[in-house]
Image (tube, rainbow, N blue to C red):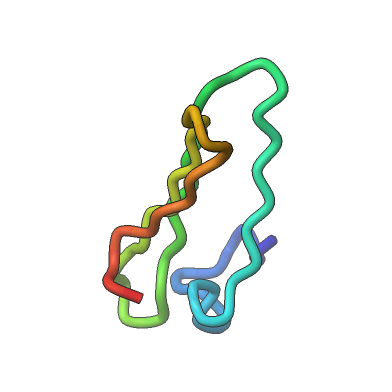
Length: 60
């Protein structure tokens, strides 16, 4: 959570992030996180035949 009056993130939320996805009624979900410099990272999870796959839009 962030201060609703904030104009930028308080810290780099995408650094050392812990992602939890609950895919009970859906097959995929995504979340976009804003970094301190204003860039964004998208985290996507989806069900596959082998389980659950997690990807992020940057190369980490």
